[in-house]
Length: 458
Image 1: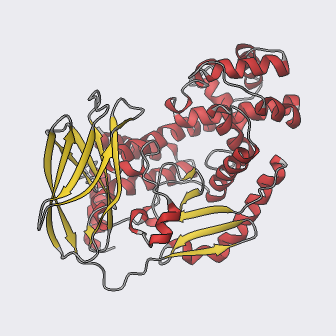
Image 2 (image 1 turned 90 degrees about the vertical axis):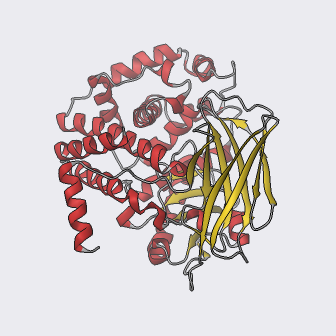
Image 3 (image 1 turned 60 degrees about the vertical axis):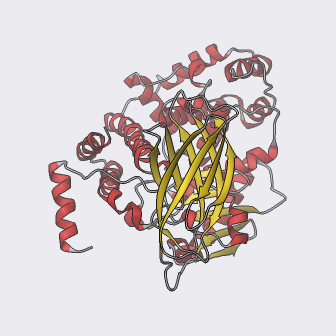
């Protein structure tokens, strides 16, 4: 980093002034009626295989509507079509994945045409293709252990640290299998990605872990704790159960990982929530779990599972958990309540009462009060930053295309941070600095930086 940039960052931190960040690969269209997200992030380069996401504004009904994206010049060519589907936030979204292969194109500007039918909405958008790097370092590669295939991109921090990471990954998987008394028949596919996505981990058919360079890693979390959490999801899903409510899925993962982002005293931290008035009653929290404040919900879920295991034992808890059945659509509380009655003879409301009595038995540490409060606030700031300036990283809209297809086609750009995000660096630096102060217990300094962040995100 040169001295001009250092001075600039210091000035911005001291004064609270930050330039408006860019939103890579995202642009409003039709007077704000639609948002187009382009993948990979800008700048686009010759050789990229480009995807589009189109979001409507909230409240716009695009049921049964289809969008077509075409290249207007140098000649008209339809790139792809997609249907709109509703999202969780009262919008509609269409996805056109890898519809424009730019191999063989020339650098320069290109005009894209977007047409929605039968609504007959249409607009154009300019994009620029830059020359491809002369010698790209980036290729998919794999490291193998007995438990896992660990996929990474060459030229990224994962390649550098792989010899150290592989035995740690093997150890975490074996720990989870021992904890759950269940051994997977097939290897786990794990992807170490060089950019921040969500809160750092996702599990689907494969496990995705953020492993960016330290200079851009604003998630101050412990990789092995996050990995343990995600491996629990993978083994838990393999064990099955007719209906596993999200609240208990996440609670089990937090409990067995020993914390959410780091190892932490779950019961004492949940007791702090109750003491500060931030505690969410269980009958409310279990329904629409992901819509509640993330860190509070996960902390309560993990500490409740810990409480239930300590009270009734692992086998009794696991039998209850695997024996939950759906009762009413969208009402996880009713399903949990029925299983609690069958296995432990108490309602969800009574379990909540007993849990709160247990939490009141803890002595409250004033420093822990600040820690718990700032943890929720810091990660709320992170998610707000992602929503506004890096929406592909936001956990409810994360861009995670099929990694097996990416590997087979040699596509890496979707997961690479690019220079188009350079204008976001001051905000990310503040997030990193706030996280460092938070971890060191410098809560006053962390709060001051978070206030700067919040002003920039308004």
